[in-house]
Length: 447
Image (cartoon, rainbow, N blue to C red; front, side):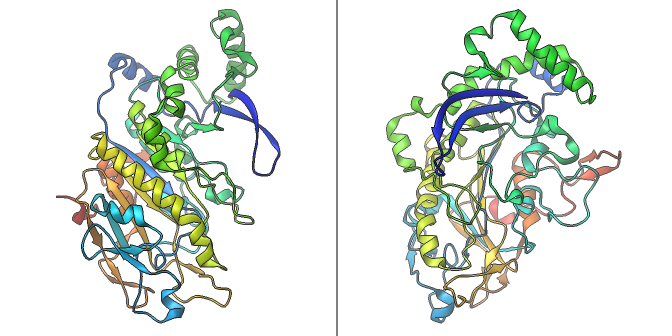
């Protein structure tokens, strides 16, 4: 494991931490020998490429209190929020989503997501399969790992998959990892905000160029990895690891101080504080901007976890505390992609693991509701400014056009030009596995 340490800072619990970037098997996603040689032949060209930004909303936001308001329902169903009209006639959203409402011509709302399970986990959003249930040897790979395996890196200086999500205390909220694809395809995970005084396990950046120290360090890695048999072609691995760690492209993508201040301001302020007892994610709107910069630098898949949405009590004050950050950050990302001409190449998907109960409970909260949920899509050359599907009068079940979770994943893979209908990859037992065992591209999204 390569650790890039930085200056110390205080987290919301007031405990000192050290900013760091971990670069190891997870960091060198997709860098198999054959892929490295292929990338070497391509050189450092920066072609336009298809990419996806996956935004996971841990805890499951309320569909009725966000994208599917029910103003005609009784008070115990419709809740406290009023709908507002959006830029697209006939599409109303929650009053706490004014920025999204103004940019609705660039969004697609899906109000009839089905196929969820009652489990607080990102697994179904990132793999298309429930966390609990039959799985191949090694487990199912997350979206980023699959993209790494099938497409590989666009350039050796940028991993194909990057996970910007902060580690969450509730383990199933975190990316399930590469599964049977192996650690070489896990997403690169930059932890912390500082890129100053970067070191390689204690070796200062100024000493990177001292060949003897570097080779000595890699000899230690070689001895570790050789005992597991995980890697081949260590000379190539060593060289590529060094290239990634010292890559100015990665450093620049993560360094928001080089961004236009007006653009940074448009994304709104960060809120690193966590909701007590929720074990979910902070509201870091800057992660949306970083995701865009990583895509521009050559990443194919970037994952962001955002906010806390498991409001069994005080649902309305809870959503008031979360929605303004999501509203501003996500709408800024989508408008930014359009302004930079990336709206056809980059697909944005934002959703949680399930919806919330239509009836408000005695604690002024809403409980788990896997029967139906919602999602927001943008970019990807989609036919935007529309709603797909509807729910029943009180929002308890789909009324028209149910869209399965796996249909959303199939649409993502289709955008990335990965044919999940025919593609199989052997698991650790040698058995061929489909990335999805069902799922159809959502036809309404194509012009």
